[in-house]
Length: 271
Image (cartoon, rainbow, N blue to C red; front, side, top):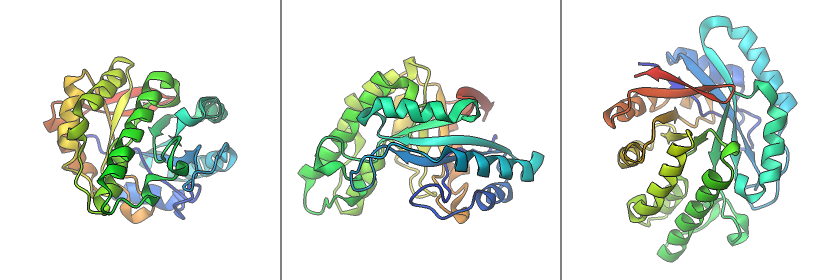
């Protein structure tokens, strides 16, 4: 089984203070064969402020320094988690262009309300005793996930954590599932599949596993073939957490391979 974790963060993400040297060595210690750093570039900040830049010079410097230091101990890739591309597609494309030929992989994510609720990160909304707001959050996320996959396919390689708002809805005690939106999710998955993009199984440091079982089955039924896995680590101690379990889920759902990316092109590895 090909052990890889291609969603991770370092001090270049506002929510992390990790050094890439530490997370990459943790990946080696965990027995990974491939590891990708995907620092955040969110076009909407956590409080809804517009953000239009990513520190590519710093990202490339740390990547090349660590890659040279590690040699052939692990395959290290340079990626990006690009958030809210449908909010400002032109800026999204400009940011990606600055990555140049060194950019291997782009996760397309939606962390924020778009157009309402002040553009807040879904994390900061209070869903306690407010199932209506919770449903609105999921619907807003699905609306803009559709915009990402249908209108901005060049702005992502793998669709990141489609379950993201549900993490905080469940945190606040509201029972809601993507099963309530199966038809809409299947339409999104069909678009992802027919444009030869991937779906990410994001295990959130080993916390989210069971929720992916039906989603993987839907994706497979919608024609999906490319699946990526990521622990979404923000510190070295969380690198690779839940990855072996995620790979077993992918295989159980009927997929023969796990996918990584080189130069934004998919590479398949037998499970």
